[in-house]
Image 1 (cartoon, one colour):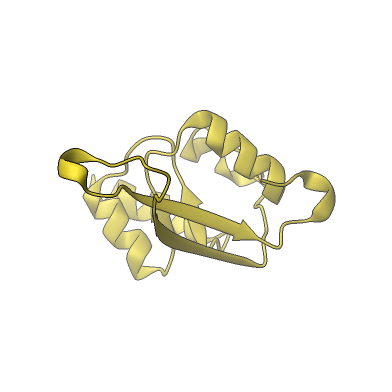
Image 2 (image 1 turned 30 degrees about the horizontal axis):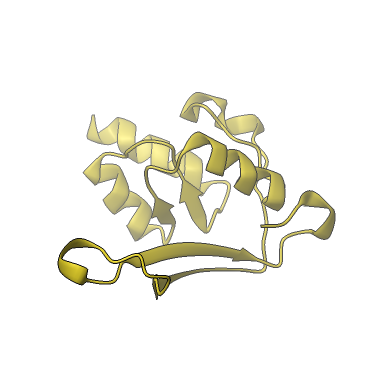
Length: 115
């Protein structure tokens, strides 16, 4: 199993991505291998959001590691994650303000869309 995960991560790494977004989860060992290759991983991204990000960045969604050979990477100038406190009267439990984490894909090719 470990050899299979190493081969899968090597296959991903051969395309030199900076960020990998996945719809479900990824094994802890694969997460560690990706981290060692300096590939950021975003887990549990809903399919409609994956489709929007793919449209905006020009990426192709790959349903399986087996289909990776013909994939197209998306591009953006910068990616960052920020946390915001919701101010609009939406208090969480015990009156605490809700913390929202947002991903930003900035500098995407213009004709592909925007958010």
